[in-house]
Length: 137
Image (cartoon, rainbow, N blue to C red):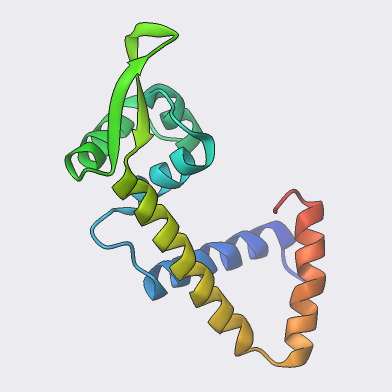
């Protein structure tokens, strides 16, 4: 039997990539899309905090946020706690893209699950419970 951690990681990465192909997000690159999803989940953040959450450098996040702002998906505003700093938040267009993208990916996943046999769907139900125990929910 293989290394469970590696096997699970590879399977999840491949699943997410497949769902991205099934439900593309248009011209937004993966890094930008991930940042949008983080902002949708957490609310406005400083770019430095967003960079930490996303695991990229501050310079990379600045480029990502600049592009998202140019595309009208995010906006910067003064941080009320520190007027020298700025917060990044979603615009209505950014929120809409996140919601539509999430719905498209869930539907793509639903189609994949429905294509499974009943035994595999039951095994998936059991695996979901195990994943929840790992903090994946």
